[in-house]
Amino acid sequence: MAATWTSVGLVAVAVLVVGIAMPASAAGQPPAPAPSSDGTSIDQGIAYVLMLVALVLTYLIHPLDATSPYKLF
Image (tube, rainbow, N blue to C red; front, side, top):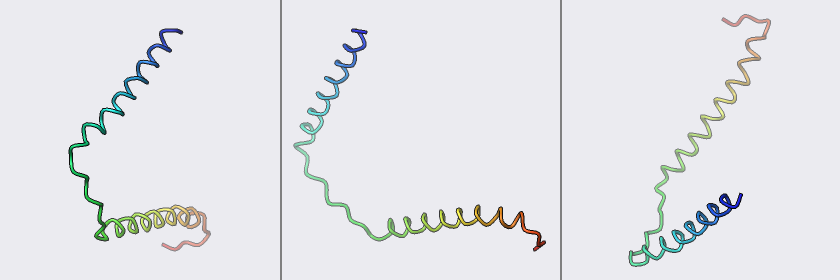
């Protein structure tokens, strides 16, 4: 059990060292520019939502159509 806690402690120390060293290594670089949106990501998000709505409606309507006593086709 002591070996488990020792390995957990070593991993925690390694994570802290890497977490401190990574920002320090990027300190000499210029800051990244602010992200800009040209509208394509918004259009893509709307398209995904509409496709999800169409999928949900298809699976909600299909069982109702399959159990209907009326023969549509």
